[in-house]
Length: 117
Image 1 (tube, rainbow, N blue to C red):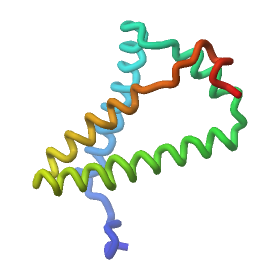
Image 2 (tube, rainbow, N blue to C red; image 1 turned 45 degrees about the vertical axis):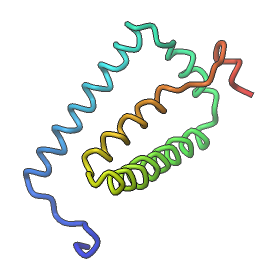
Image 3 (cartoon, rainbow, N blue to C red; image 1 turned 180 degrees about the horizontal axis):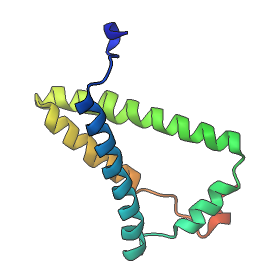
């Protein structure tokens, strides 16, 4: 399996993975508080909208969204911009900014019923 990049992780990798997970967990919690504090939206309406979607479709949405985002922002944008700028770091920064901007776009709906057809 090492021929295509899979190998037994070292302890350092495990510790960094757990630390990254914990940082992500804290960031996720903080983002909810921040969204609420800045009045950026009502997550309750979004959750109510998602709850009405049948479970198989929700699973498909989660899987396709994650794969699509990885392909577009990490597989294409980061690599291409990094190659154009001759800096993988700058490519990562541009990808981060674009991904962050796209992530905050939302449909202009009035309540959960307006977007659910």
